[in-house]
Image 1 (cartoon, one colour):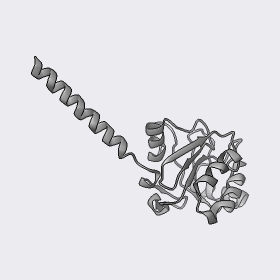
Image 2 (spheres, rainbow, N blue to C red):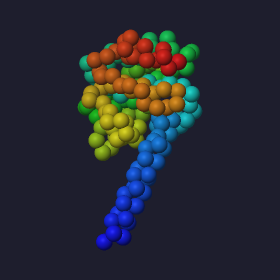
Image 3 (cartoon, rainbow, N blue to C red):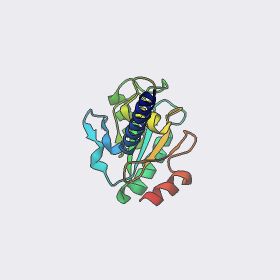
Length: 180
């Protein structure tokens, strides 16, 4: 009986160590890849050492005007190293039907110069791996379009903001200023 209890305790200790090691090896945003709006794979490792602002977007949303705020934010911070990545998504049924239409919409209406990805899912079983990671490791996921996620220079998640907070709001820029 004592041998069984000792074995159980040893197995429990091994499990705790393995789970702790797994948490220590937690991914950073730099461990992911995503395709840009033209279908070219972007390895986010190339942005190591730069903070990243990730935003799920949609072209037919009441918050779509925030593309202009994103464009302004990008212009203000691009020379300071901030990477802005917009991930168009139809997860909330408000995105155009294909990437070419999204690209044209963004360029014509907002003269976007920051990274725009292909259309991705941001929720559910088919969510892009970045959004699955945020949900699993940080319990953060977009509740609607234009949710913002900020990562530091090590690629670690820092903070998130809802659709109601514009990208160039002081709540966000104060964090960015600390990270730059």
